[in-house]
Image 1: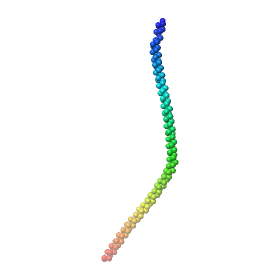
Image 2: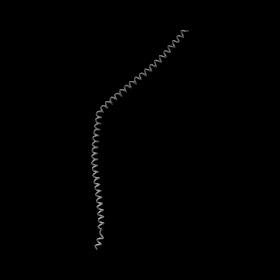
Image 3: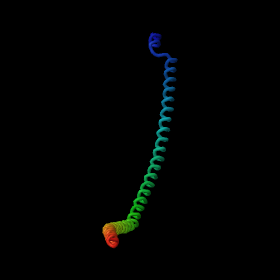
Image 4: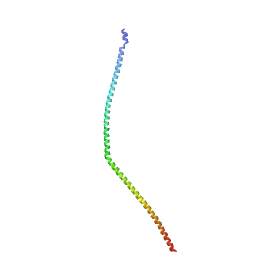
Length: 145
């Protein structure tokens, strides 16, 4: 009877093999757990490092933004009046040029009118000269007869 009971249960050797494989699995599991913990720890360190870097960069960007805004304000406050003055001066010069151009156009118009009068006088003078020459020619002809 002992043999039948003894034969039904696992042998000591099979128990040792199973225990040995469980110990091997347990050791492998412990190694994997340790690797995961190490990776998790490294990831946390990197996260903290990158978070710190990101915070430093964000602060630098905020500082740069404020400086840029200050520079824009400075340029606007200091250059805007100069630009306005320059624009006013430019507009005044443009208006003066337009007035000067209008005056030149008026002078050209007057000169054109005067030129036309001179041409008319020249034509009239030429006709009178021709008439005087004809008259002189007629008088000379009369004197010859």
